[in-house]
Image (cartoon, rainbow, N blue to C red; front, top):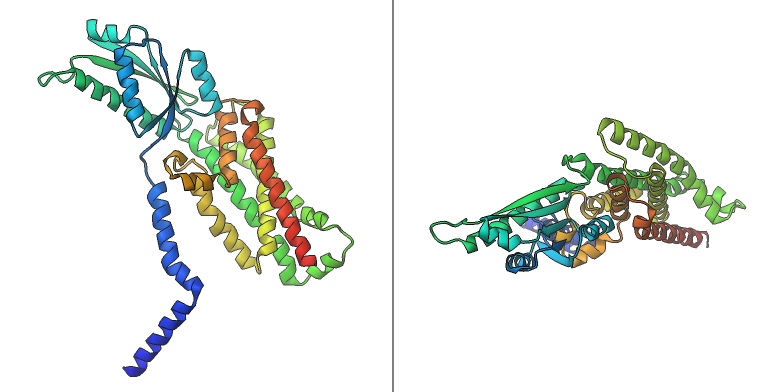
Length: 369
């Protein structure tokens, strides 16, 4: 028994001396609990909305105050016309608009009922349905306040819901752009992450080091074949999405292809960087899969609304390339918008590609030195 306890003590010492093991034992569960606790929720909070108030009466102001007090909504601004609503949706800043018609309170008092128009961005049908339900709940609460004990709903507020961009509420319009971002990013990173480290393991790196090629040319020569293969992969994904899944393409197909190639180049640059810093092919594949899959799924925005997450996680999502690609593809494919609506996201992706390629080149030079 004494020998057994001695061995147990020795194993404890091994565990507590190994910082990597301690990090896995204590750091990983805490990180997962915090991350999934905040991210994995169906509740939607802080959704930006706009209100178009043609009534300007007491009833409309009372409902607007309820919207402002709600944790689910963040009232962006009060608009003056339907044209401004359309502009707000095209900018992608709001997901829902509420329109109070003229004589809203007067109709409610004299006719006993009034209508309220709710316009929702249905490119994400689940979020749109949930938000319209929240609006119905708030109007019911206001009706209850108007009524007495015996008749809790003496006046009726009818919500006329209009789903734009996806009136049939097809789930594919939300998941196909997200899956495109996920597949293109992971496949491209995984393919290139083993390219340079494979040369090191096979011993052919020395041949590259003594060649007259500039390091930039060596890195680009590694990426070009994967770029061509990825473009073919993109064509297959687009054909399957359109003809098999019924995904609409309302915008420019050339713009979609151009933006997809930009994401591919960004992913290839990231893969080359991983390949430069990894010690083996197994380590490169592990970094590619484990390091990219979970952040891509969590922070792209097609599975879990980013608005629900705490500010630090929202800031982290900004460094995930697939988030910006997902916004671009939804804007072009579903909303039919042009380059003027997505130039900021395009610039961010372009900057990421240049930055990753530059770091990859710098790391490659360091190895040469």
